[in-house]
Length: 375
Image: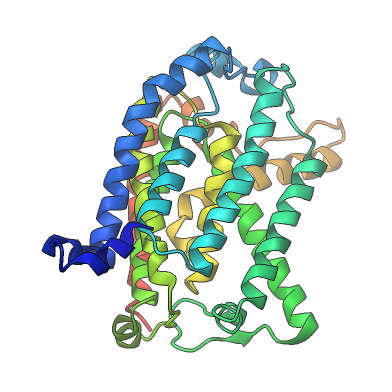
């Protein structure tokens, strides 16, 4: 929004810097960080006063609940991330269909996550909203997102292209009614899948937000490359005019993530809750689609993928062995799922699990960046 000030460079020369996307991205990260540090103590104090604490179900976590004692740590910290990202993006990104769509998805899923956390924390409903209701809202958000992108003239053609890593041409065009249905299904699985994946990863202090920062940083670089015709031509990737502004959104997410990590590092003063995890997954998922790098997200967000797969494997293997067992008892593939709890059960300290997962996330991010050059 403040980029218009560049038109007044004749009044004050340094305002011309606002024409540069990289400068505004830097300002977005700085602004989001400052906002996060300013509102963080106030938000945590009020969440504690309202008793919006995290209530663990001991039947699921067993001795972990008492061992790591997170029982009364306030949740809904995702509001800190949301306020920082949203305000910063509004200030420094030039509004276009890509930015508006990204913020729409983020705002909508923040609302869904907030309702879920509200029911869990205030009404002591351990399940929050029903899975059916959550799926309904996620489907509605995906439909609205698809309608915006398909019918807006700027994005209509580009959003129909499917690009995959290592190839320099789109492998499929989502044309016609069947194409739109296929595009919706794929977009739905990406938005919902990564929403749930980050939600599952958010089980240890700093784990989810630390991995989110590296993913957001990589997609900020990818957004900048996709929105620059010269860089896109050099890297043989899809040139998508206007998506460079998503680099500002990603930079704001990096800044907000660092501020939140300050309060979420061990021992955590606040958890992001579904208010943060559902919305962050949806935001990253839709940005990956808009910059024509959806499948690359499986590489860059490798930690989130493994966390989700560990739960799928655990549940599937348990049900399979239960059916095959003559005693009707199932066998667990991992000591506990998601997989970060498996390593806790092995005796790893929480900080060691988190730091090693951060290292893996960084390696996955570098591998994802490498796909831009290997084509």
